Length: 103
Image 1 (cartoon, rainbow, N blue to C red):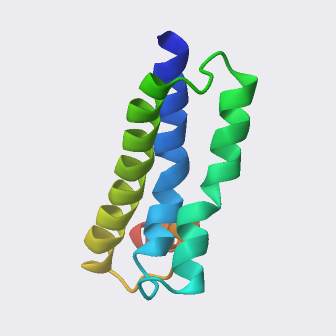
Image 2 (cartoon, helix red, strand yellow):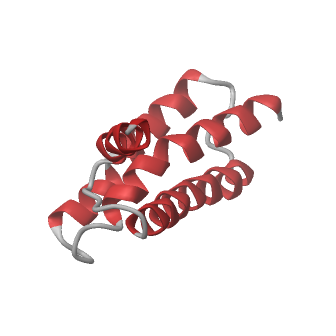
């Protein structure tokens, strides 16, 4: 169970930048599909490398973590957009925000 919680948290955190990106592109566009699907191979690899496995009960936690991470990224972009001009890249916008706050 500890491994499942750790993997779920990793998946949640991994999906935040992708949710941020997804929120800035047209629905069902190529970039939208990429933002949703690029994390999937990493999640599969993580499942293989850990003791989590592919049991049906693990899907509840991992799919939920996936969508919560995407949603957090989207919400974070919405909040940041209220204070500054944002791009599709969370890390670049956080860097710009840090520079704004330094001045």
